[in-house]
Image (tube, rainbow, N blue to C red):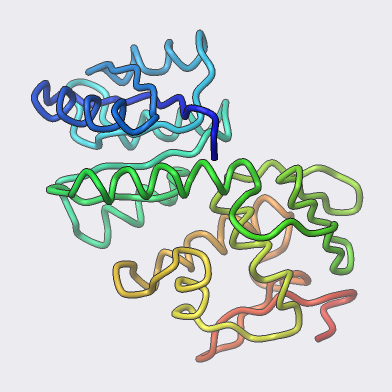
Length: 234
């Protein structure tokens, strides 16, 4: 990744903002900062960003609400930063459309690594180049980070596309939550099982796949998930 990353940092802690921005700027990330979620939404309308780093505990409108508003208008990768590490809060962030999360206090090196990983996914550089993947009614174009069902384009976030691509490349094979976390995130140790469940639920909704009678992504009770082909056949 040679081009400079453009990041929007929405954080009300002045000291943390200054330190974070300086660290990222020194390592090739251009950072625009704001302490307000509302101002951040305006910035997203005015400028193009590769990633948004969004604090949860903001004055006035909190980060969850801002995240939901961003996702309604943009597929830009969102890294949610929170001082609350409870699973319920992380699940809530994912449900509102965040691609990743980081719990305070965090190391700047980990923040940079996560930012770069999110941007690579969004650019379709998360893995080796490949030709379009066709599974029944579903077609994935990794080079364009584009998914279609029956010719209808489905708007996915970078993390959703990566998860769907991971399943598509192993179509017909049941993958456990731990396997999916390791394949998508690079490690299952720092994640939690429900992260995959939330993302699968979002994928099904966007793909038009009935959660009670899915024809694309099936749940294999006690084992995990599998992407199936035509008419739900393995």
